[in-house]
Amino acid sequence: MTTIAFVKGHGTRNDFVLVPDLDGELSLGAEDVRFLCDRRGGIGGDGTIRVVRAGAVEDAPAGTDPGLWFMDYRNADGSVAEMCGNGTRVFAEYLRANGLVEESTFDIGTRAGVRRIEVVPSGYAVDLGGWQLVGGAAAVERGGDALVQVAGAPAPMPGLSLDLGNPHTVVVVPPEVGLDELDLTRAPLVEPLPGEGTNVELVRAVGPGHIAMRVHERGVGETESCGTGAAAAALAIWCWAGRPADQLDWLVDVPGGRLGVHIGDRTVALSGPAELVASGTVELPA
Ligand SMILES: N[C@@H](CCC[C@H](N)C(=O)O)C(=O)O
Image (cartoon, rainbow, N blue to C red; front, side, top):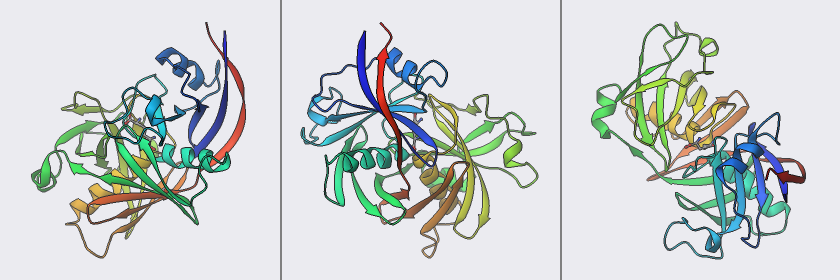
């Protein structure tokens, strides 16, 4: 039996089991991750975050400063994801609450690259770095580059694919379809489905610079929030609107709360709260 320490935290109710591995001695397998995220037999979470120095992470991007604190994120099904926007804030809160970082602006390592974090009044803001329209500007002009069938919707809806380090497909739900009535207990069918899978954001407009969304996450299922998904949703709506220069700040309502998205020159930033709610030890199954 291996006993490990854990901390439970969330950002707008996208919840994580953090596993401090400050000396880089732990190896958490996919089965361990599934156990930790299990809401009945384990601790419960949408994913795990191992807190470790980049130098101890085999697949850290080449050139990452080995001394940097690294967010080793896994989805609840044990799969590895490149990035987790809400996770970066919860990771930042853990680092500061435990005196591992004292500055109010600092860098962390992630599989999508080094990301800068800043303490802000709502919690933390993270520069998510560069983003891309997978199908280029032509996909925006065509209205999308995928068809997305969601249980509870009368017909497939057009989706726009974006890369924010991890993959997203954003769908605007037509007004006659209630966002709350869609069934996300089953994964939406995305056609064509990228080889690496995708996170699907279902969006409706609330007002200028203000949207609401639900999300089905790759490797998890429906979650109450997705930070990279919120940024992808704001970017997609902004692109569909012709990239208005006076609409760079967005509020994104998710079932678990509210996130801020700022569209910069080449990058996009996400802001919102981060909470640590419990800590303890747990025995990993043999
Ligand atoms: N909830 C996260 C995204 C987590 C990773 C995602 N499920 C994937 O597989 O890409 C966020 O806040 O960004």
